[in-house]
Length: 303
Image 1 (cartoon, one colour):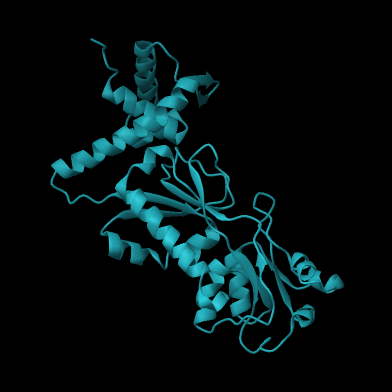
Image 2 (cartoon, rainbow, N blue to C red):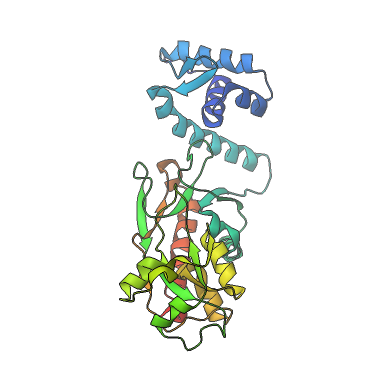
């Protein structure tokens, strides 16, 4: 009969691998870092395989450790769920959702109540993250991105969006496309680590308009949400994704000048690690989020 490694040893490994250090695991488990090291070494000796490379004071997962981590994480999550149920506490599934910062600030946070109402009580951790995100270390269940970034995990395209010139009412109610260059423009940049966002230069070029240096002047923001807020404040015309500006167009805080949309180069994508894909709450949130994104992008206000 095969002798199984100790549960405490496996727990020490999972915590250290997820947190990235023995010290962090020791704090989580309320033991010393030396105890964590001894527990992990005992597991390695029993299995006959190294789980960490120990380089100076750093630890790096070996190939065996990388293979074990997601399976152990899922196992300990299941043990925790069973423990809560047997302990008599009402079971509340936990869901870790990661989205771009602009989506976390307002767009998704304002809509989560709809999911909770339809699905029931759930403990949701909403994270606004730039790419890349550490799926296993942070136990992320589902990640929404602009464009595919994580082909090592199951990823699907969910909807194609566009950017629309938008501004506050009164600023450009009757302006024609060629007249946009004379208005204050709001530029959006996602920085060197972000995806390439369409610029006003791209928009004027697609519309067949020679804007010259006017396309480079104006305000700028490094997030889609900030650019949208500047437009709502009446400070200029922004190029906003439909998913963000549809609600403001519907309630009249923004209007669309008589100007064409410019389709984004990439779709929005959902990534769900295999360790999370079989969980009912993840499957329910996936379908709800896809439906919500498609409903907003298909708003009549964007046609």
